Length: 202
Picture 1 (cartoon, helix red, strand yellow):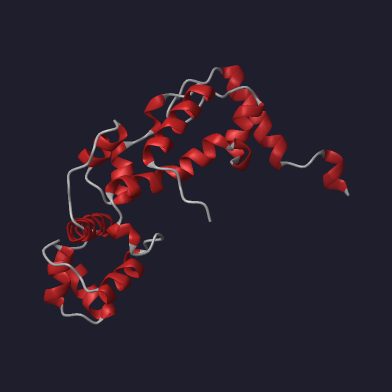
Picture 2 (picture 1 turned 180 degrees about the vertical axis):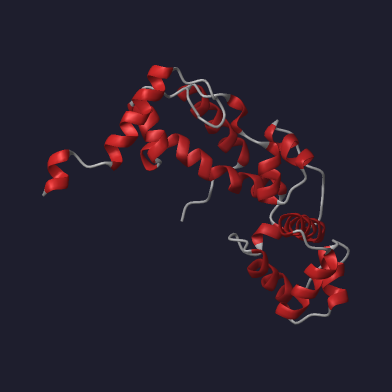
């Protein structure tokens, strides 16, 4: 398998794809990327501008990213740290005290516990999610977007946008379709999902 391009190359290609399609360049939501990577928003912003992130160790990355995921989990579920630590303790077989220390970002988990936390938090990237340098983590989060923009035929919405001449319309980001563009886009969507009259009768 080929190695992914470095972050600088991904950002260059994203910029080129954005300009080619005429969509707005602010499609990179810093808060969303920070949530998806468990990186601080300030680090994401620095990396997107081509800067260097703060120096850190692997242990620092593991601690801060677990703490970020724990905080996000509590926000989403409306639970407290004690509840989260108790659940992790029960499911992963560690003491409640140790689970809390790890989720607070105060302690580095063992390899075995880190593996368990990958499954607990549903992290698709495996242990690398916690250990990868910030640039690699952000790059990994941006690659799916790059693939969508460079190969719109693999994305039904982007394919329809290209086909019906509404390349400048990303409905979430742009929000300024003309009535004619919207009608043409909807017509294309309907044609793609509703079979012709004759086909339905067969």
